[in-house]
Length: 91
Image 1 (cartoon, rainbow, N blue to C red):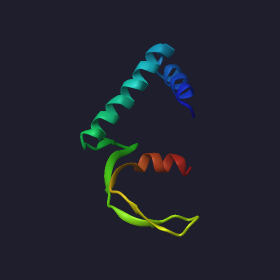
Image 2 (image 1 turned 180 degrees about the vertical axis):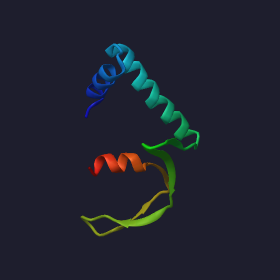
Image 3 (image 1 turned 30 degrees about the horizontal axis):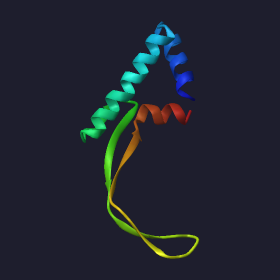
Image 4 (image 1 turned 135 degrees about the vertical axis):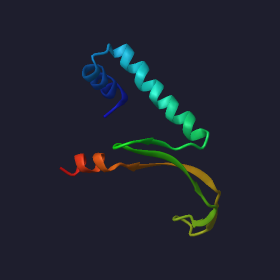
């Protein structure tokens, strides 16, 4: 599902105009992004939790040459699905 399709679905289900739904979806995404940048988790009960995890520096290999490559430490965004979402998907 693309953002346009998500906006259309939200507009239909919430009884909003597409413009209002687009602003709501964009505001949600911006809010989640800001929280993650600040190091906060975003738990949505029954749906899931967005969080940031630390990835340690490590060594990897270039698959073409076999040369050792240093992979720097970084932060990664993760999403863990909640129980209600898992159940809905597995029906």
